[in-house]
Amino acid sequence: MSKRKVLVTGGLGFIGSHTVVALQNVGFDVVIIDNLSNSSIDVLAGITRITGIEPEFEKLDLRDKNAVADFFKKYTEITDVIHFAASKAVGESVQNPLLYYENNLSTLVYLLQHMAQKDKSNFIFSSSCTVYGQADEMPISENAPVKPAESPYGNTKQIGEEIIRDTCKVKDGLKAISLRYFNPIGAHPSVEIGELPIGTPQNLVPFITQTAIGKREKLSVFGNDYPTDDGTAVRDYIHVLDLAEAHVSALQRLIEGKEDKNYEVFNLGTGKGNSVLEVIKTFESSTGQDLPYEIVGRREGDVISAYADTKKANEVLHWKADRSLDEGLKSAWEWEKKVNK
Ligand code: WQD
Image 1 (cartoon, protein in one colour):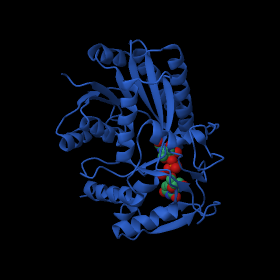
Image 2: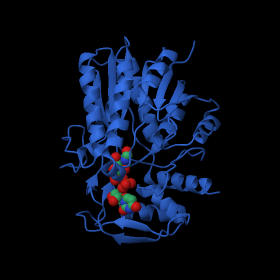
Image 3: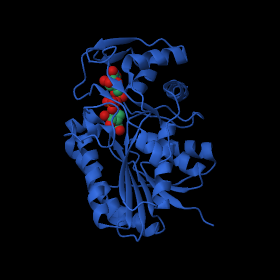
């Protein structure tokens, strides 16, 4: 029997590539769409070396409405989509909002226009805990209010969720899940795929590993005057393999289609918060590397604390993040050493 084929947009990216591996590991066929604007074609070979199965690949910019239409004419059998492709740098989105609204939203609309025409289709959306802004209570549950976005990037995630929700309301055949990621870190233990930040890393862990390998002089810790135990901001750092496996669980839930509701939201985190200084100390103890850092001022738009209430994903998706911060940091370090060989 032929395998079920899943479209993964942005499948050569950090979370996308790890999700492709997780999908192949449980027997799905995968077609990747990627425009290579923030990824490398080498990732395709990395995925293939891990699973022994080369995913189909279409270099395509989802902003090209006709190219999207041609894709679905070619792949008529596809009814399952996991949509990662988007721009995701918070700071860049403030400087270039129209790039973010076009790239993150028009592409979503074009995909949904095709998925919504099918008798039955399943759509998983890559969202973010950023939609909560600074939540009033920790841990953050899916019922926490979505707050006015602090950046165009965060706004595209909020609007994206609303576009999907509104479409599901009138298209019974379309079932969708938005997955709100906390802070993805780490790399595949094979060291064949990992995070490939282009230019200066915006995120903490790649900046840490690039500092440890000597590419950066020191880490700037953005503020130690927050109302937290050690004054530095707290986040929920989830191993990218746990995150990838959650996408498989979410897709399997939609395929089984037991539920009457056709739109759901899940927070994906470990449920544990760690401060920036705790991450630094854990990195040093788990890798034996000293990490030079300097405390500087707060970064605009940062929240004090964000970590997930994971009950809903644990109970409904039968999924739990079980890899430790230590494992995430060690795997990120192994990957950094590999890419700098
Ligand atoms: C984590 C902590 C920083 C860099 C963002 C997006 C979110 C998702 C993940 C895309 C914060 C501190 C960081 C540095 C530092 N992105 N830090 N020095 O901001 O929690 O979340 O990335 O999907 O949507 O909002 O992640 O890794 O940038 O920062 O002190 O050089 O590390 O202040 O407290 P963030 P981050």
